Image 1: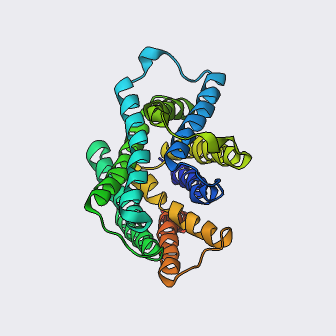
Image 2: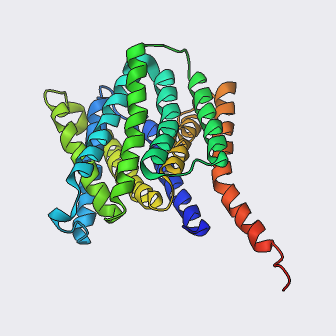
Length: 303
């Protein structure tokens, strides 16, 4: 894989995380009485429908027998599992601990899965970037308020991190034989179908408000359909470990939007966390291009 190809993949992943980072800010504009679980489920339903429509329009789904349906179902299951585990973890142990454990565990689990299942190399540069970014995520969590430790909540947060890393690995495998639009359409729609029963017997009256419709459409179309359009293309070009570490840009974007858009207070730990995450991303983004320039500038040996 060329350095230019890998660099393009990095920017695709960062574009996806930029959109994911708007999720919390968008939910802040939801009307009173909104249900986070309903929003999470509808996000998958709308995003999956949009991706499926695009794949059908481009005739990319192919033949039924060409798909490894075990991998598709497993990826859909872990996609749905991430939604359930993360929201439940935040409810049990709070936003700070739930987010810290989820985002802190995902890169390590993703790196190990990539090495074990795909033979990916974990370079010193990746480890350095991951340590910086994970440490930054921890500081962001510490800066968000008081900590509430609940062992079951921590287990759920670990489940969320493992789910994200696992479905990234599974999607990477599917992308080797199928188009990004088709893969994400089936995986996201599968996750939506698995979560749909959770909508039964829940209050949906708040969805009739224009603000609720706008929030749900943004979450479904921008933070799910468009973001996974970027993410799947980037994942074709970079390792699983790199993709999961780059996703740590999401809390940095979310914290920045919270300060700029919602007027939230920036604490010293949060500022330090943003700087560390940014430094980790710079290590992953800049190093390959610098290496390429050094190689290009090297004087060739004389005959």
